[in-house]
Image (cartoon, rainbow, N blue to C red):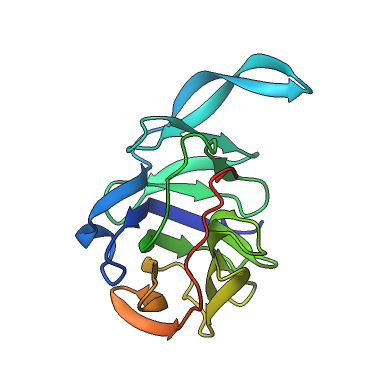
Length: 211
């Protein structure tokens, strides 16, 4: 049986001066901590214009106070570096938040996450994604070799920054993708900058997309 692909402790999206990490940000616009999961009835669109209430396992997004929905066959709380983490199965499990309540990102921002891989994914797999992979939004991803990619839409194109050194397995790593119009895109592992690139044009949000 394959080991669980991903453990996440806290995922943080912040508006910042661009060079700071989450703890030093001007303001957090999205924070998910996996201290507990709750069952909630949520009204969802099922077919065309039809809506119905369904029971979901959820975790709250702290800034909006709105629930993020857990999907998939297997996920559970596990011990993290500080408090609980969420363990995902690497095949079916993922988390969504409605675009209406998603972090409102513009200008300079950072994405921070504590992760531990049990195995590498079979292809590019998002840790967080609110992007169209063309010219708008952002994503932080991991590929089949454990390489981390930070991507943003800016200047009418999809800009990619990839660190070509594999993340270790079964070890907690703090990963941060940071963007500012002046400094471009940067990736940090455990607080150390590992790669960077300049970006032409300013970040274009994909605010109407689900995260």
